[in-house]
Length: 636
Ligand code: K7E
Ligand code: CUA
Image (tube, rainbow, N blue to C red; front, side, top):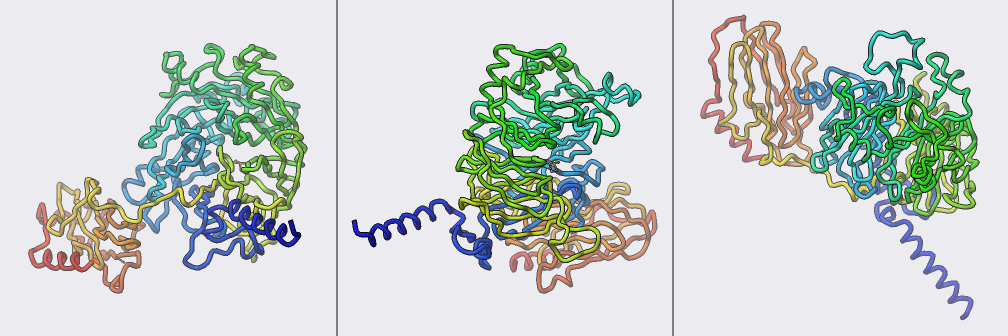
């Protein structure tokens, strides 16, 4: 073969290979070749290859970014009111928040089928109030908030769905007495308990409900991950503070050489509950490992571990000791063999402990302050190093060596690889979620933004592509291929069966029963029907607005002057908001969401008369108004 043609084949091969490796990413901007700028550039009008869901930390919500452009697309309100859309203001979302106006959201968890993201739901925890929210990815709305989960105090190891989303989990980070009662803090070791909760997820609706709880020693239960493949059916939880200190934890909880991770056989736990072996505490079925056996075990981990991450094959469980320079990799096969042989070292409050040497597969010398690990599609793992401000790339399997490192800016916590905790990571990108941004952005005063950094994984070396600031304060994040999500753009009116919904001008009305007034109204460009509402002082007024639009992006707002009442009504949607007529006089309302050329004209008045003024029991629009509204509807 002539030299020239061989070169030609090599080039052709390289081009083909490049295209295969880049996969869908190349078609949606951010190809594998070219400069860093080209790799993050998504042309105007084009779309990103991935959706990234970043937890909002103590902002209590979820940030949605497009990757690789790193553009912030939207924020989903979850545990915190959001007045622009009326989240926490309208009756339904207000009830869902249950009186709380704050949450601390750490870990988004996408629903999975066969261990891969299926694009149906996103779960996320509120650590302090021990709640789990489910966001429907059809409309990117929070649809359920489950909790406070009884007996759980600070749901940090949460939610970490199982491979077929049978369960999401929660575990107490700060142990308390269970049931909580007046005890002395000094009696910590005797009276305080850790709890692990398995929360069932309905396979069709995603509805969460109580599955089981397990009483654990009062260690600080920290993080979790689900087994898959050979370890399917098991859930793993790390802990620190096996010293059981209750003060000065930064010193006293770092004394032991070893802490633990727990391995829970969740099918066995559920079976034990179903067989009536649990004790009900605060409404939850709690299993006591001192009485019920063979479903939970402890495995030693060096030096105050943080993250626990199962590799894509499901064979290895990787634990990061924060105060150690290594990731400890355990073989699930060895763990299972030790359990089956009942080779226990002892027990902790009824939970059998296995021997470190019996379960360990390898120690990977990654560097200082390892926290979390994610994976790619080529057999490599990526571990965040908080103290070194680096990511270490290492080989999963012999020789278990570090093959690359990259500096990040600064002090990385979690990291998010593309589908990097599933059975099939895509190996395109990893995003470093840095705890400190220091000097990376224009100064905005003492509260610095958080720092996220996009890193390309497609070459032999990791390559830093882009810095993007985020608002306080993402912990974990997950990214899913954009082609797996198919969000709706309007709510089909035909499917709107909300109790307050009306669909024709003829049905618009104001109903009065005592001092409760229900306004059944329509919004459509550019009119409220009715736009005059007459009530009496002291009336409780429920506005039920239905947006009859079926066009993309035509949302209307409803804001009432001199109040905190505002909400957005999306196309086809009905929402209810309650307002009390406190003072006599005229109270304007208006459309707060820009919707049309006559958006400014979209307004109305509430006339508040003196208490006890005569009012009709029901007021409907007259025939002329109905005709006008029907003309507006026809012109939509
Ligand atoms: Cu490491 Cu809350 Cu997952 Cu923060 S946690 S980093
Ligand atoms: Cu409707 Cu602005």
